[in-house]
Length: 318
Length: 250
Image (cartoon, rainbow over all chains, first blue to last red; front, side, top):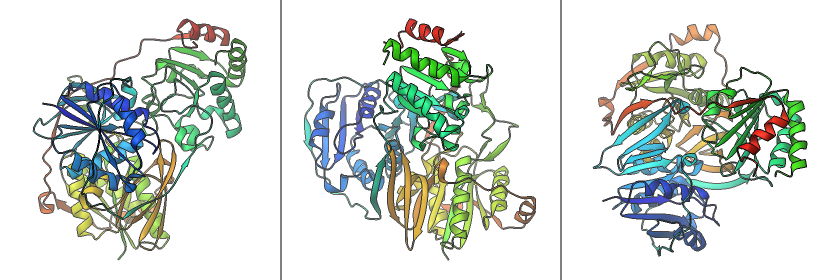
């Protein structure tokens, strides 16, 4: 009998879209019960959102001031205490889940499976390694708790279903005071969120400067797209760190991905290969990005991109 | 003595493309160039800079692996670490087993700070630091892009999906390092020679009392499915037409 616990991600006010994706993955386990754990402060609305996700049988809300911020050291012992009676604990392979789930697993004395991208059975999973150069099948011991993170680009979110019950639960767990939240700075802005955007436009080293990178931003705006970047562009200081797409940055699966002046190192390609349509604009006809591009344009980006922006604006494509 | 322990992993070099063995039993890594995991190299650099700032007195680097991994320890010593420790273990130890070994080392060495990369570029697990922090019952600050030490606490800025987060953690603590924390130094020849005489000790897993039995069975390694071949267009007008044909602009 499979009993799955999904750890909800939220920003203190709203449930993150990652949770619906984890629920989708958990449903592939064909669980008897599928419980979402919401650890929050004044999290009633977040729990109500989780309770509307299709397939969820119950939401457990652990509402406490110490859960106002997602500190792994504080959350992990609470999740470990909730996990008894479950066969699986799943969380998103976002920075939130990647920080938290290994800590939960270690407290439970079990290993953790990172970036699950396929469920082949209740104890058989597929995951990528070597920057997505390979996939491997992982068999977990059926006698042990499975703790795993879900590769978000591999799963659509579930839609809404019948309202599941929300149960408030108080936990008697000793919590550490050795970790304190100081501040959080969102780099955000008006553009769509990179992790969840339907369209993403990324720029690479070929842009040459932070000023020129604004051309990519302009194309993103013309398409109503989120802005991304290659590691080379981030390292060169053209844009903020959290725009990095790839093995060590964000792994995304938009409907449309436009790579501008990106050569396409394997580490970058692993972050985009689930995009439905990949467009590459690059001067170098031998750039590896063209090997994965659905539509490739060999051109000087400084001519092609302004022209593309004009075309899109004329067509009102955004 | 205020001490930093830096944990490193020997991996196939960042620039080498690794392929799946034809029989799917694993990755074909024989004979490939090996290096320190790039994130761990950043962790070594971070440790050295913290020592140079006067906040710590000693940097000890540790790895769990077979004797070949001593090459990477020597590189770390050449970068400036004071001494090295190899936990004798087969390659491919699971992160939980490595974390158990590191906990034993952290206790033995009375570490005030343990630094390690946020993930290894071979298995891409990204687990060891968090597991160590759990087993050691100490704070963790993952994906660090800035580390400041003041007395018995560290202020760490973390790269998270939505921007940057700053935490304050009491020492001892575990910090995992992200790409933009620093640019590791180049090793010069005199340092490589000097590193040969720096202490490198070997300790067995069973001496540390570590259960390293694997919990997972890995099989059917496979290359990722290829995308269908794309089309080349000649100009922007054709590009827009191709996008429309795929319904990508609707």
